[in-house]
Length: 120
Length: 111
Image (cartoon, rainbow over all chains, first blue to last red; front, top):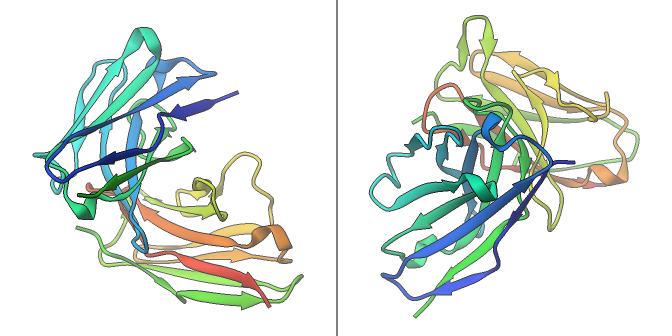
């Protein structure tokens, strides 16, 4: 059974960095890409980027290009999303979502979400 | 960026009736005879769940009460025989061109 379990809630001051993990299980890690999507209060879902879990290649939304870093630990079947230079407007629920295959942009399984609050 | 606009913002439908949600893209999402359009259901307190992809292909396990249609820039999600468990926010998403973008969501309630 496919599972994506994300790390717990985070609270950070403006300017800090946050790193969220997404531990996957129930399938072959290298065969599926992982995307990150966030949902700020009252806002639409917003895509941050994608990582090829086999090669580590990444693709980012231009909006977050300078502030987000996606990495993976193949031995732990885990993907990480680091967001730097946090702003109040980064307060949101952050999701990892699996692509239907390595290069797919169709999100077939989502993690439970990690709340990130940016507060002074 | 592709701007996705859903209508209505919210709707209330009686049990057993049909619900229709529309999604319009600012640019065509049709390429190689495929529409790069997906629909998600997000129940309260839960993560989004994939319902439909390629505009009309139901994901595994999705009841056939749910159907998607449309092409190019205009799409529709139809829910027939509405059930109480269908109360949710529905999101459309284009994956034709990066960045991937979503509609603002449509809240579906029971009348």
